[in-house]
Amino acid sequence: MAVTQEMPSLLEQDRRQLHPLHHPSQTDNPLIIEHAEGVWLYTTDGRKILDSMAGLWNVNVGYGRTELAEAAYAQMQKLAYTSNFAGMTNLPASELAYKLSGYAYPSLKTTFFTSGGSESNDTAFKTARYYWKRQGQPDKVKVISRRESYHGITLATTSATSVPRYHKMFGPLVPNFVYCHAPHPYRYEGELQDGETVGAAAARDLEETILREGPETVAALIAEPVQGVGGVFVPPEDYFPRVRAICDRYDVLLIADEVICGFGRTGEMFALNRYGIEPDILAFAKGITSGYLPLGGIQISDPIFDAMNSAPQDEAWLHGFTYSGHAASCAVGLRNLAILEDEKLAERSAAMGEYLRNRLSGLREFGNVGDVRGLGLLCAVEFVKDQETREPDNDLAMSLQNAAAARGVRTRALNGSLAFSPPLVINEEEIDQVVDTIGAVLDSMSEE
Ligand SMILES: Cc1ncc(COP(=O)(O)O)c(C=O)c1O
Figure 1 (tube, rainbow, N blue to C red):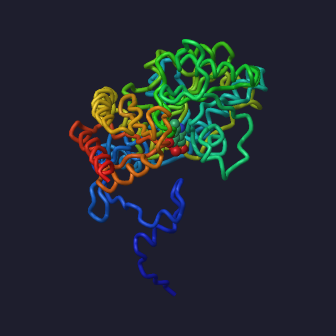
Figure 2 (figure 1 turned 180 degrees about the vertical axis):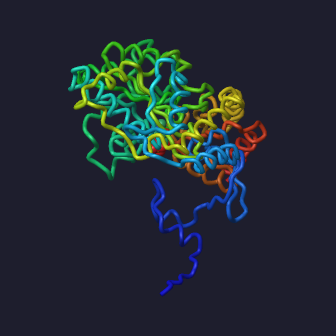
């Protein structure tokens, strides 16, 4: 007998899914996005919203790119997916790995594909341990990360993530993850010795952490070049060169988590190039496909690849996902890279980022703005209760996020800061609209 069911309302229907990082009682009235174009989202109830977060920091080439839809369609008609496990490959995965060889950093020539950032970082941790076991140093298992870092949501990457609210209900954390101070110039929480820069102090804290734990137990440091979810912290220029030297001194692998920073976001195609250093492992995701299909991965240096390549069978790198090297995702990745290059979107990110920061600096006339910072189109304004104490004003940031959304601008409140990470195709007029909206909300709040 046919079962007939009345069509539920869209909202009723939506209550049958759990949304990431959301209390189910807060999904009563979600925006339902029907289509999108450039930097604009269009809802089913006729609203138009400027997405100054590019989804989740990832829609680098903007919404509605038919080239990417066509790349997926053409590939899916031929071969959407096949296993990439031993003995099989597909053309787009192989072409993309070839294209990426040495692309981000000359010394990283070998790629492994995942479906997203958490899988990439988890893979990086396993690979670091693997490498040291192959070097005859099986005790090097610990991973150091910086406070307020975000590295993903699996149990291991949650443990590397140093945001306490993500730990509270999921403990105990995986052992052997250790934290050191973040190089946050506006709010450095460690000790500053006489005449020391924040970059030098944070690097010293890393070194002291390695020595305290015992270098013979530390496998890797994982670091976002610009910390995103923590509140968009840009490190001082002298920090990463020191970090690279410390990692080399103690045989600690440097994992660059460029899940947000990669593919043009910071005004460079890959962020550590700015500091003239290369990581041993690069984790990427998000911007590789601009979110059109899920894809991520790691790239590894030659010594790590050699450790895999020379391993006896019973020490093989036994790691892989069903969707590693997904044919349609890789085809979209290739086309997305062509767009980033043809439209010079990394350069555009640098120029538009400067324009955005200049405009955001104008908000300093409001007394609660503590800091304006960013690199490329990865920026934030931090709000404080008091300029002297610099106590972050989380409530204000959250109210601004909500009021701006009601006026058609999507931003994200993070630890007292409002983050801006729009599609790299954003233009000056659209940036004006974002900043004018925040200014108007601040105006109406100060009147109240
Ligand atoms: C720096 C960083 N690493 C890792 C991740 C996790 O990526 P995913 O959500 O694709 O698993 C994120 C997500 O925002 C991120 O910002």
